[in-house]
Image (cartoon, rainbow, N blue to C red):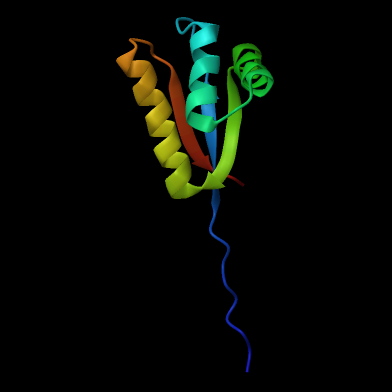
Length: 91
C-alpha cells in the first residue's frame, strides 16, 4: 500500500512595497509591531525596499501572510500613509 503524498501547504511571501511618502521611521515601527522584528532587521528590510522598490518581509502560511499584510497596511492607512504590504505565493 502506498502512502498518499501530503502536499505541503504553499508558503506565501509578505512583500513591503516602497513609496515616496511614508516616513522610514514609521515603516520600521510597523515592521517591529506587526512582524515582531528587531530594530536592526526592520531597518534593513525598510532600506532594501527603499533601494530596490520592494522587500520580502516574511515567508509563512497563506492565512498568516494575508492577515499580517492586511494588519500592517491598515495600520499605515489609519496613520494616513500609503504604505503597502502585498502577499504572493513563494515559487
